[in-house]
Length: 310
Image (tube, rainbow, N blue to C red; front, side, top):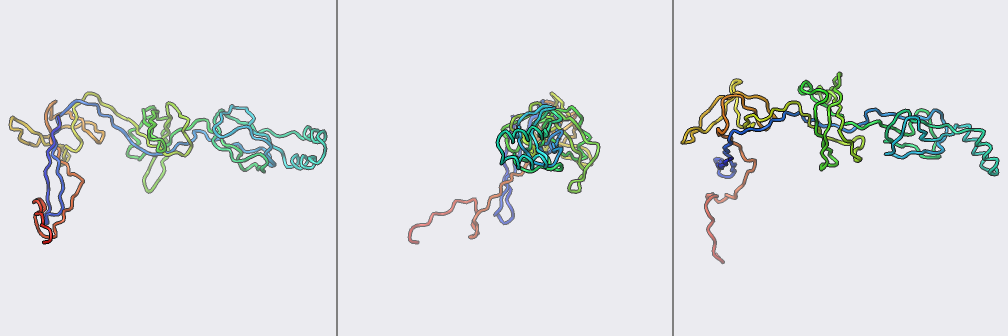
């Protein structure tokens, strides 16, 4: 059972007050899951730009964004500059003449070289195309790519489980696995980071390239261990101490403890405490109250009611 007491701290002028919470926490058994939290974006694992093999004009495009395509599938038909000029000239002739020139000058297919999903369709029928500009972009699979600080990257291994949260869809919680850890670092805002790729176990239909995500990577879990609150521990020269209520009088005493892993909310206790011991946590309440004390009266005393007309 957690007991909470409130102590009111008052500044010398008597205007600002801060609550000091004194909380008794019993030592309990629990699981500590140590994690690394990082942010990133959804990106294609393999981003393929399909550029036309010729300069000319787009006659027909057969896919839309979000469509699945197969390797070897024709996704568009193109006309070379010469074919487009001939067909434009033949457009004034009768249908038989137009069909003849269309059969003489065959259109050029644009073929997908991988299985994947169309994520960009940048050109529409009738528009000019060039060999330097892609008509569509295909992704074989959308993944999550995050940047992890160099101080944390050593804790992460391929295959570790993750939790994925989408900024655009906060109600959707996904699970996944670490798929790749970059061997080459990057310098971002004077911080050395490494790219880590995470594959979701299930890719929902709402996934879009460029979406912002938060990824929690679990790198160590200890089950059924003694735990105490993170802020109950004080350090002195590398030695950890806690305040413990002991004896029938519940007097407070400082006790040295040996700690294990932490998840930044709780510490694992290896030695110095036993199940049921009570540790004391003192926390300052963030709220600060201002009182109107311009008359110099005590703000904690009830105000005298004034009579009418006086």
